[in-house]
Length: 452
Ligand code: NDP
Image (cartoon, rainbow, N blue to C red; front, side):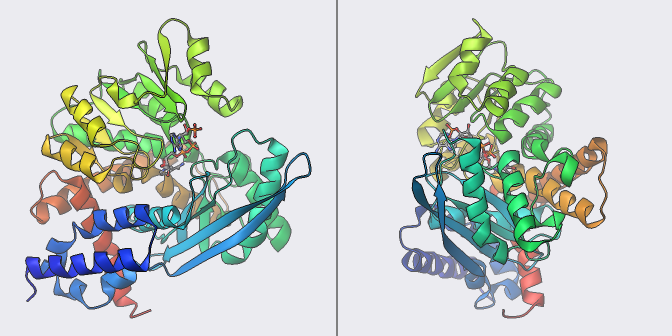
């Protein structure tokens, strides 16, 4: 019988080995620490999981592809970017996870995202494995034609690694409906196949699911509502700080308003907007999605209720809820202390790993309900899996049906995390609940399928 402290020592050794074997990948180390540090109780209680090699296999991607992406700008100059696809774990289904186009992308960032994705996808209860990809290409300021040429070049290599039964990418930072369209077009051209299920986040007229664009933001608000319900409260009348102004942030703000709450901020890498009347989501969509502008333009057009704060930290705006929806490590320990001082009740992660480990500990120690991204933002990938199901059946569901499924899945994820945390002696700790519940499902499938 292995004790909890022996298990912890073994996990500490493994974490040291992960750092040695994957040098210069701080985000991947952070994600591995965050998960492995919570697994000791389940490894001690369930000897089958402590089998040598199981956790070691879980932290090693099944396959990692890195490739050259050459493309020409509108002046005919040649640029060379780097493309990635990390196929992390396929024990539960085809690899599934988005593509990120952002200059900060490197192998460590894609591995952290792919690792998180394995547990997130398991939590949805659907048949999808975990993967992630992207490029260090920066779409900001690029013309449509340049983005199209980049996407075509990226897919010219990626197509050989993906497929509806193999690996199904989707969007993430810098990859929305426009990019998915160009990627899908090139895949179809190269393969001469109408294989709708190879990518998700497609346009509604050509194989996309209704509610997919909304799903991550809507799902995060539903998760936050479930955490509040657990404490005898609801969303009605609460104010919220939201960071980001992309896909996740926009639909977070929209759903908060629909459920009677009020988001008073949004942001981008240039600063944040605080709008005392509450963010006007239609104006934000016009500026960001139609004109591809910046949040200062929103403030200019909105009038006297809104103010742009260049370079500021959105977390300094007092609110009941915080929903980080931009990028990793955007909310640190100081920000968490500010939120706590201002009386925040719940923090729910729309982005992946937006809160640093120190921030998470401080929020939890202060009694704030904390929803980790792998649970709280799983609505996006869940509806992607529903898009795959619709593609497979060559049908499309109504928006109402998809939203009903999304609501059920988010409530189920909340219940699973809550009950699992209780079962392993960590009541109210959604981080432990999400990590263990995701781990159990993947580990069971890996054990059943042998050492591969
Ligand atoms: P978008 O590209 O649509 O929007 C990203 C937003 O975050 C922009 O406002 C962007 O501002 C800001 N941002 C990005 N990087 C930085 C940075 N380094 N510093 C400051 N601001 C930054 O992406 P999404 O909304 O799709 O994704 C947001 C987060 O949600 C990511 O963590 C993603 O992994 C996660 N997520 C997304 C899902 C989806 O379905 N799309 C599913 C689950 C999680 P700027 O334009 O100035 O860079």
